Length: 366
Image 1 (cartoon, rainbow, N blue to C red):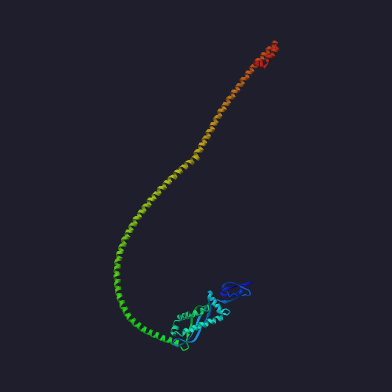
Image 2: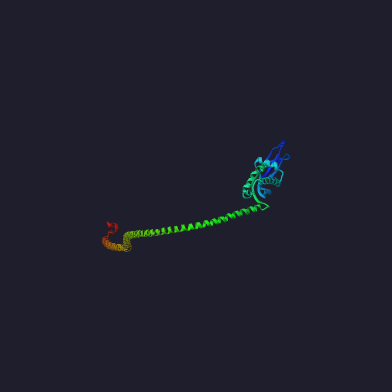
């Protein structure tokens, strides 16, 4: 059996060994690897950036001037498989400080050798080129160790015999001398140029004044022409405005007349409607009630007339009936008297049976 080993992106894991004496090595960074118990070995190496400060003291340049140079280098172990294998072969089992010491000694050696081939001026005035040269020369050697130089810069350059200071003073004196000469020449040229400029200025001023006068005269003439044209256009515009205003007023008046006609027509229509409404109201409130009252009175009169006629007819019928009744009574009384007389006569003759038969109403009725 075995274990699963993980590693971050800032370090590499080396798994070596295996079954049957295998010499296979596995290099892993930012991942994981399997290692068998007892027969596999695991080791780690840092991939982080290492900061070095190479320093070369009292190194003679090509001119024999002793200089002290310090620099700053950023290096790290490369992650390509072949170069990582080389770095592991060189530094596996060593700590970071041991790796720094090896690389630092290599850089200082190359820095010392390059200092002997350059002049003080080349080193001091073009530090970037000097640092680039050191980096280019040292890169193949440290690359064979699996190390990559990320950056290399010169931090400081100085000497103990004040050569750089004297060089600076000389340069300063030369610069000062050139500056004084330049100032004198500049003042001379400035005086000449000032006189020329004054002359040119006067010429230009005269030409400018002439042009200004010409321009002013032309401006006044153009202004007069423009004013005349503006006045004409203003008068035309005013006349056109007044004509247009008159037309607009005429249109407005015509529209007002049309509006008045329309309003009058609407008023006449409203008055006609009012007359119809008043007529209907009069019919509804006066005529119709009057007609209804007349009709009622007529109906009452006709009813009264019919009543009088009917009463007269009833009275006549009553009189007729009474007359008929009285006539019937008189007739009946006459018949009764005749029968009574007849009976009396029969009784007086001794014919009682015939008298009973004769006195029978049915017989009398016959």
